[in-house]
Image (tube, rainbow, N blue to C red; front, side):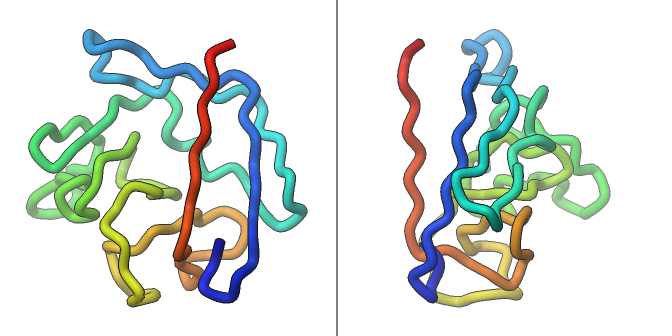
Length: 124
């Protein structure tokens, strides 16, 4: 839910995360099914990437000095060269521009932070 109380939803039919040997890589999401007309697939760039945390840098970000998207974002996520989505960061009422906001880029852009998110995963 955005700060304007707009709810967006998307469903992934084949969400698969690897085990510890893959650093919990996001293996697959399947074809995204947007349940809201204005939301896009912000996880597409994360497929094939290991889960990173501030103390375990598994991303591809080598452009900046620290190179650790999880450290910069204060969260764990399937970062490639940082990410189009981050639902795990510290909650912040500060909206864009801020590296530590909860966001889902595809669909409306960086200026829209979220005040509430939910991820539900069920075993097939």
